[in-house]
Image 1 (cartoon, protein in one colour):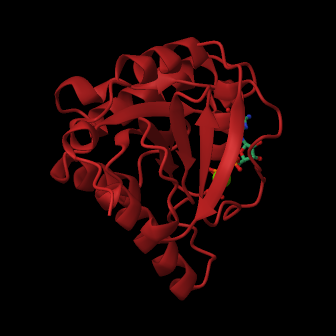
Image 2: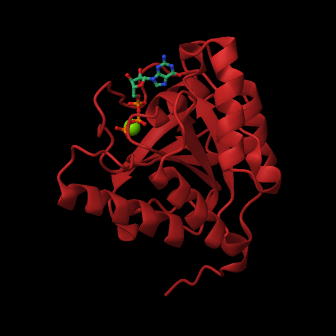
Length: 207
Ligand SMILES: Nc1nc2c(ncn2[C@@H]2O[C@H](COP(=O)(O)OP(=O)(O)OP(=O)(O)O)[C@@H](O)[C@H]2O)c(=O)[nH]1
Ligand SMILES: [Mg+2]
């Protein structure tokens, strides 16, 4: 998709501060440092719209972006950052689960896994939870520039096995360094962007 405008809207911690554009929304979720914020910059073809860091725990609130006035992207904080204090970790996890549960505009989650690693317990928990809540997700195996061809097929197989029921097993291989997978991920996003039923069915009531 041609991204003509990509603008930061706001950072939120609780639902009362989520933006109310009512546009189809996609959220980017995954472990801390997996590359969520970098993936957003790569997808949007912007170098520094979203802040990234080599240190885990960079994104601490939900950051919303308006794309072409058509879509909203939500960059979520990472989960499973072992070095964060327990209270902070719990706060982030609550922020993520509340968002995923309550955000009516949410169409699908772009679920990132590091192609070099086996999905962790937390990845599998998120997967189970999304499926239980019937939240659609698009699986992305990122940092592909960091593996050899051989490792890549081995790891991809491993990841897909862990996520192996039905359609959801296929992962899009991505690299923020060379933009591999960019077209494919956009295609998946745009295929799903029809306004979620919950939004169209919810009447807007003006007091
Ligand atoms: N080589 C390579 N490095 C990447 C890629 N994607 C992200 N990185 C690096 O991984 C580190 C973490 O990236 P972020 O985008 O900040 O990760 P995040 O998931 O948003 O992290 P939190 O906000 O802490 O949850 C940075 O040093 C990035 O440069 C990729 O595709 N290839
Ligand atoms: Mg981040």
